[in-house]
Image 1 (tube, rainbow, N blue to C red):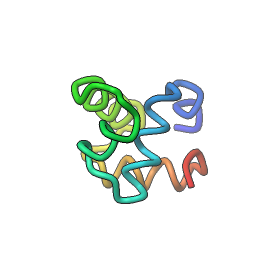
Image 2 (image 1 turned 180 degrees about the vertical axis):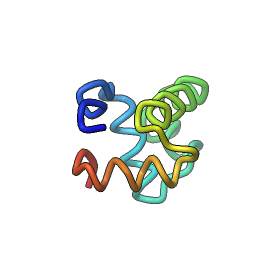
Image 3 (image 1 turned 135 degrees about the vertical axis):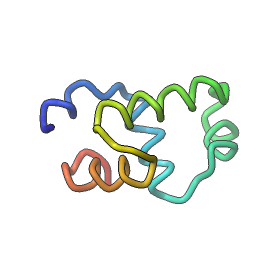
Image 4 (image 1 turned 90 degrees about the vertical axis):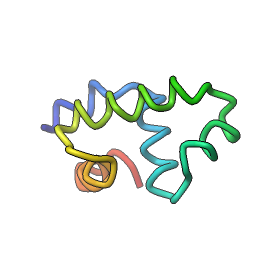
Length: 69
């Protein structure tokens, strides 16, 4: 799974980091000026790449791989 880290796009990492800090999708949209559908796609892609069943698991796996803090 460590190779997955190299596949995560900057927006995917940013969205995961914001989610880990408790931001909602609406918060992310306001803070980044990125459309909600793009944020949703970034989070879905990150979950797929990290082989996570949900966002909480994706955050946990990303933190465990030390790719978000």
